[in-house]
Length: 81
Image (tube, rainbow, N blue to C red):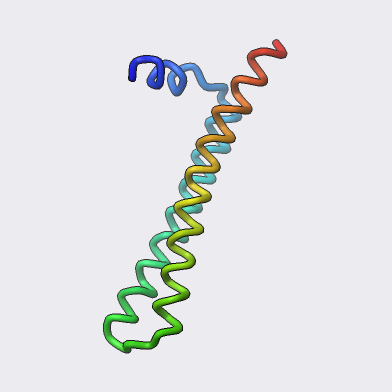
């Protein structure tokens, strides 16, 4: 756990900025999917349910991708320098 915290403390500023923007964007998309799922609760439209679930899965997947790619890009940049 301490090694995990050190990794995020020593990030490059550009990589950290890209990660923050990506995570915020994915969080907005995640909120949109939650809105679609809440509309489904009132209308019981199966299309809204499926669309909401797919967008929810994709947004969480992209959040994880931004974190992993940020860590990998930071490690590669530190090896090059």
